[in-house]
Image (cartoon, rainbow, N blue to C red; front, side):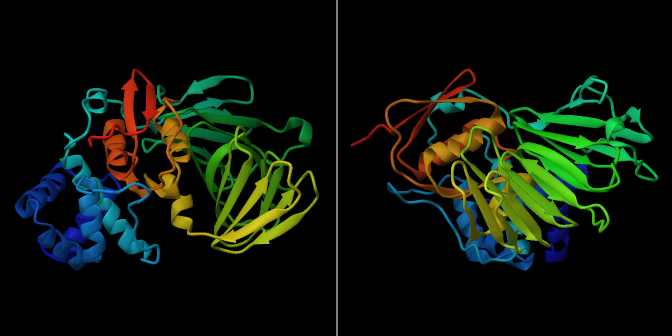
Length: 389
């Protein structure tokens, strides 16, 4: 297979648009290479990836990493987005080929908990609740001249030829709730796209007041805001208000957490801390942190790939402790976490597909640190690894 054909197939696979014939072609390609990592490195590099990085990913997904305590799997964050795309796509392919993890404890393997999926509950302005994962594709409702439809790609779309403007007392609001184990995308009537993460709620207007576009968020969401100079877009999250005209950014502000994180990928945003009246302007690549009971807004430079990994279909852990890792996992797989004894001080890193079964992901984490997992129904019991010496 030539490099251009491989690149095309990987892109199709990444977008879940492969035909049966194309999937068969990818499977045949992998089977021909077998487990020869040098050959795999060569072909990935021909398709635009980097061989050394591909080998690291290959080893990770085949569970060949032997990590000592306090070590973690990582690679250079300086590589281009194109390389990350190729590596993660190939990593997902490798992962799907190995459904029986080597050396993973039977307490994990025997309990198959599937990853999250597109699911959400829409509450209309009149109080009607629509369970989107159970409803048919097509028209859901019409409100104030706005057509609400569910598409076959897991998107809720609000469409209108012209955004209706009404007086404040006639404003119509909808609520989209995404439970644990779910994610959903909504396209608002102004053209703004919002990806909503697990255990999150977006409260938004169907119509316009003619002054601004304001939504309220609990949890995490990624925004691609449609530019409109006359109608600033505002996002309210706890003690924070973000104001933009048109830009791409991620907000993470779960009610149970003490911090609200806003990460800017493109454009510019202005943040207001409501309790103190302080405000700051973010530049691309910067992250703002608003902490409960702290009057200052902390600004830092971050790798944006990690902050939006969830939206792109993977977990990206960067030197995180086990409690932070398990909080993310529990939301996506809709499981509870129980800690048996005090968690160790190991730090975890690496990139993992969000499409993996829970047992596969936990098996990888056991390889990376001094930790042991046991699944009982929909609970994960976390304890220090049992010493074999």
